Picture 1: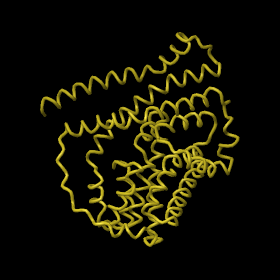
Picture 2: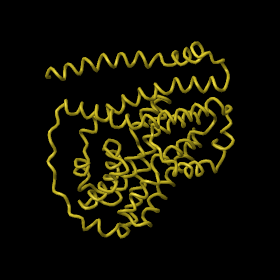
Picture 3: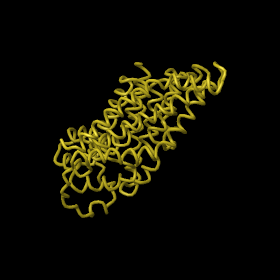
Picture 4: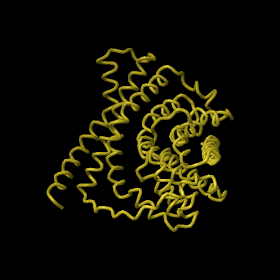
Length: 340
């Protein structure tokens, strides 16, 4: 272990201790600032909204920085090229499972969907396996996972991961069995297959730098959406009466799940921005299955991704792809409304 790594570990340990002390006192700080410093009257709608906002903004941002740094290090082990190598030659069902799991840790954004799709298909990875990856990568978002864990506990976080994997694996498997390769644009198969690129051996310093860069690039871009999402959540928390949303987002309202999915598709947002709204909806009586369906639709069924995928898929396959994923999301919503 070299001196630079030792120094980093010492700084990281000290930083973790400071992080925990600050994080554990955020509730006290929010009450103190809202009622002692700003002199808001307890119990008022505006007071509740301000306290929620002051508490949630630093809490979510601190969780965001921590998880993005850790995931940045983990992702340095899983480049798109390495993911493609792992999936090559796998049978369909095993490939669907591996693709869904790798989708969680492989670097992905909507703009990378086309090159990843071309790279997978032209190297012989089955269409269904490729689509399992493209479903899992945006839907099972590591930021959403850690924020859900921090805000709701491990049970809700585990439900999110398990249901997301189920949708990605099942949808990809069904799409593979439908043999829809004829609906891929012909130019995709004419694209030259790239030669294997030798990946540079990364040191732990390089991986730590990847984590730091991820914080700068991702958290630096996401934080305005986080603050906006928390502001919306604060408004819901302060002004919407308790159990008000149960009348049209409750588990007994059969049409709430498909409505939540329909509303979620055009609301293109990142996970960090939607989680505070999810928290506020649950606190006001919305059913877990309905809210989970809404969140998955926002994250996993975005219109920008559909437009980007149209470059490589014909419209019929785009509609089938989104339709099967939407049905899977609705099934998950109904399931959790029935059992929770």
